[in-house]
Length: 361
Image: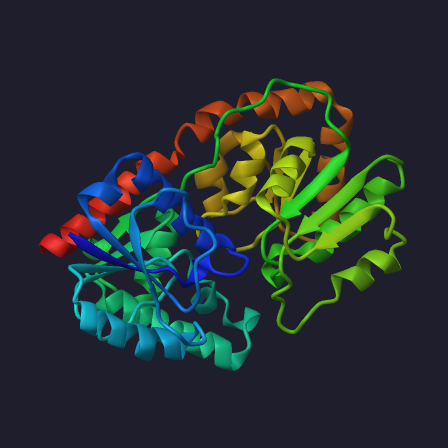
C-alpha cells in the first residue's frame, strides 16, 4: 500500500498537528509499518521532525504550505504519483485527491464558536473542513466529544467517523519528589484557553508564595491579538513569569518534569494532550470542567467550573496544590490508570487500520 501523507506540519517549529504526525510515524517505524507499506511524505520544505531511520520517500513540493499549496500544488503532485490512500493529519485535504482520503479533524471550534476567529479565517476553515470531511472516506476524531461535534457541524455521515484517541509521550510517572513551585502552560495561545485568567490567578498566588514561578510556552495566535507580555508586566510579574513562543523538546521535557501544576483553562478542545504530557511527568493539571476534560482526564485533573468565580477558583486550586503535598499525591495516584488509555502505539495501529480500510474500499 502506498500512503501519501501531507507532512507540511513537520516543517519549521511543529505544533500540535506536527507532533501528532511525528508520533504516528515514530510508532509506525517501531512496528515495521514503513517496511510493509510505502510512506510518501509531501511537504513544501524539508521536514525537520521525521523520526530517525524512518523508511519514507520525502517529496518536496515547492509552495507556501497554505490552502493554495494544499489544493493546487499538493493535489497535482498526488495526481502524478497516484497513491493508494491519502492521509491528511490536519483538518483538511485536497478536495480532488486521486485516491481515497482519511482526514484527522482535531476539533471544530471554528464552527462551534465562530466569534473566536477572524471572519475570513473562520470562513475558510469552516468551508474546507466541511468539504474535506464529506469528501473523505474516513474521518478521524480524537475523542467521542469531538466526533459528535464533527457530525453535528459538518453533516458528515457518522458511520464514516472513527474515534481514535491520541497518545502520550513516555507515559511513565516519575517517582514522587518535592517539586519546584512552578506553574506551567504549554500550547498555542488562543482566547478560548483563558490565558488572561491564568495570569491574574497566578498574580494572586504569587502575592503569598514568594518562590512561585509561571512559564507559558506557545505561539500567540489570538485574534484580535492579546499582548500577554504587557499583561504580565502590568501585574508586576516580569521577574516571576516567562513567556516563550517555542522551546525545543529537551527544554520542554525539563519544564514538564519540574512543574508542580499545569494549568489549561480551555473552553473548547477536541482532545488536549499537553495536560496529559504534564500529568505523565508528575504535574497535576488544572482544567476547566468541560465534557472533553471529563472524558479525557478523568479524576487525575482538578476541574474548575466556568463562571464569575473562575479566577479565584483557579488561584485557590493552584495554592492548594503548591502547599499540600498529600493533596498533590492523591491526584498523582489517579494519573496511572488514565495514562494507560493513551499509548501512541495503539493510536498508530488504529490509524493504520483506517488507512488500510480506506484503501481497500
